[in-house]
Image (cartoon, rainbow, N blue to C red; front, top):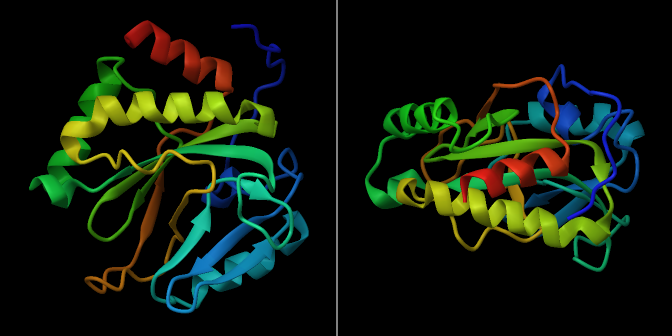
Length: 208
């Protein structure tokens, strides 16, 4: 499979750089308020508004991994692939968060999965986020889903959600509240250097 080579390396400094940055301007990420199914859309100029939203500590608020046309979070409205994510519901397979974290670290050391840029502690599980440098075109959605599926296969024993592969996926908004147990969602940066889709694809091909 042929790719355009990524020339310039890009880094994240804050968790929100994975979603909105100078190199990720096309389209809008959106939040979803579960209670009323309300979507709110944010472009790069709206970063302050998004960060204010995180400080409100609302219950069950989600953030899209990717960017869309304003007003529509659908596959047809996809404007830019910004992240690849793996949702790990470790509680469903009776694995504690601490044990799941240790297993993930071992898989990274062994080269079974790449080191994620972000680890979101979702309240009852974990969400791994791989930030795509400069974003990728919607035409690469098939590759994004392929890479996601491969990561899920590797992490299935930890409760990786096999249904969460679509580009319209939303993960919990950092610092919101998980309504199921009242836990605040937190986030850690594990890797600052962003990935290209080529890198993630190559790693998966070598492993699988």
